[in-house]
Amino acid sequence: MSDRFDPTTALVVVDVQNDFADPDGGLYVEGGEQVVDVVNAQIDAARSAGAFVVYTQDWHPDTTPHFAKDGGVWPTHCVQGTWGAELHPELRVDGPVVRKGVDGGDGYSGFSVRDPISGEESATELGRLLDEAGVRRVVVTGLAGDVCVKATALDASRLGYEVVYPLAATRFVEVAPGDADRALAELRDAGVEVVAA
Image (cartoon, rainbow, N blue to C red; front, top):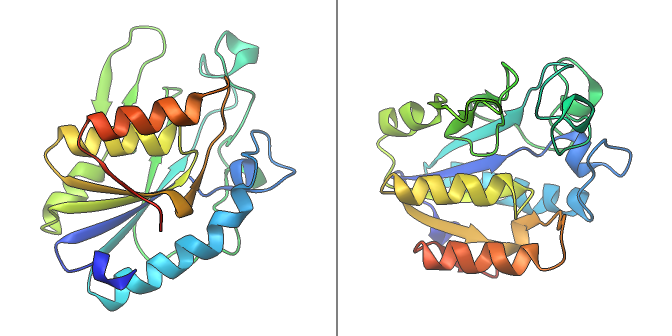
């Protein structure tokens, strides 16, 4: 695993939060808790190799068009200041945390947020952090593989980074059957390296 990391590589840990990674969470991803140890091992490997480690965190207001109760598609999850929004207690947090969805937007990609009404996109600070760290390659892990991890990996590829997507470090929410397979096909078509480990 360590050979994936060097000082020009970043490990991007996406949304390993209680609402996704705990069976009691508001939008639990089946098997989500299983990624924590895998991601922690990656964090250790990244740090040992001098790689940059950064985290994303869904951080929604209580009322947002992102939620089904307010006209969106998702159950209420990762509301600011709640247990569900906290990063998983067993996750090793050793780097900056980029919050997304703060103003009620759709926070799928770690790189951008989208206004759910107008569709207008704006950048998060993730791209700036990676640029300042001299990153050329990113390893994208976390939850969920067919939603926020996929969106982050696709944006990273569009922004010109070499992107690695380790299957062992994610799980899929599969809102519709086949979402995982479609996500992986989309990632591969975009040039993302999907690896088993």
